[in-house]
Image (cartoon, rainbow, N blue to C red; front, side, top):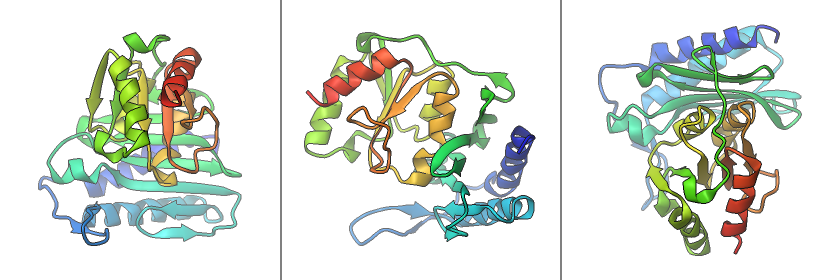
Amino acid sequence: MSDLVAFFEHLSAVARAVTVKADVPLADNKAAEGQYDPVTDIDRAAERALRAAIEARFPDDGIEGEEYGVARAHARRRWLLDPVDGTRALICGLPSWTTLVAIMDDGEPVAGMVDAPALGELVIATAQGTTLNGAALHVSSCEDISEARLSSTDPFLFEGDEFQAFDRVRRAARVTRYGYDALAYARLAAGHLDLVIENKLHRHDWAPLVPVVRRAGGVVGNWQGGSDLAEGAIVAAATPRLFDEVIALLNR
């Protein structure tokens, strides 16, 4: 794994060869009736290509992907794949969709990739730090919610008490922007956003984002301030002080 950055760059090229198309793809709905969870042939083909590349290099590692499940589930090291995060953006012709890859070692995310092909941006996080197209990234120094730039994918994903909790933070923040999916975490790592709050994320959604934020100096935890992200309720913040302030607001 000593040349991990180069391998992430290789995975980016493998996925981009499939995902970067001139035409906006059609989508199937893989959710139950009355709900909408789009998936396209691009999602499926990209995951197949990523799996093949990883298996060729690391045949003993486990792989877990959004579209094709788990292979070698008992392996200590596992690669998590979300071939197109933000499929709604993809099918709407918007450039904010990404390809996500994470490495989990004994259940902990230790490295990750957020690739935004339509924007030409490849963010990679390893033990050496987080980079954007090779340049080092670092989070902002924001410590006060009143100065924070907040993002969340969709406020209507919050319901009941969760919506009220999120809304307290939204009202306290300086500005809020929606719709960026995983790209928001890359922007946080770059210092352009200060705070991201989401819920209902699957492991293949959040695992690549954790090292991207943490290796850039940020904080990631759950809505109670703990480190267990299994429920998919995520708070990512630029500084510990901002994180603590947000946790207090969410649980007031």
